[in-house]
Amino acid sequence: MEDEPPLLQLVQKYLERQGFEVDPHSSSISALRSLEQAPGRYDLVMADLGLSDIRGDELLMKMLEIQPGLLGLICSGSEFFVSKLPPSLQDRVAFLQKPFVPKELAETIQRLLAQRNSSA
Image 1 (cartoon, rainbow, N blue to C red):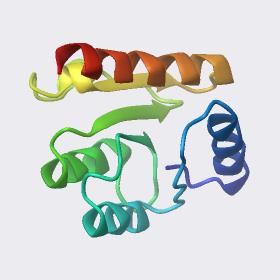
Image 2 (image 1 turned 180 degrees about the vertical axis):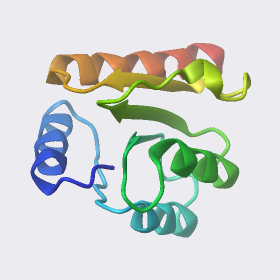
Image 3 (image 1 turned 90 degrees about the vertical axis):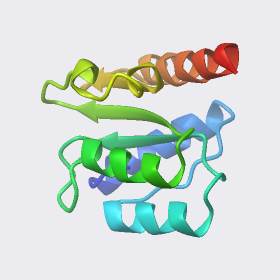
């Protein structure tokens, strides 16, 4: 989830080349509706902390209420500390500081997915 269309398209293309299925949204409300309509369809949500309609961390908390097993990746040019989230969520959420290189994004997603798979 990114509210800057060029960056959203760039991230989508990169992740699709890495083999991920991507459902891009430029608004938190749109992403939340998609999750409500198909809970269980998504493995991970990537959200910008500075989204204009709902902050990325708030969006993630709402999505986790709908789909508790969801993984989250918060991205931002501002600081964010996963340790501020409830302890039960901290191992399922990662933070990636902007700007980041595509390789960092893929590695962070793979790490989150591997952590989930090893604890399942």
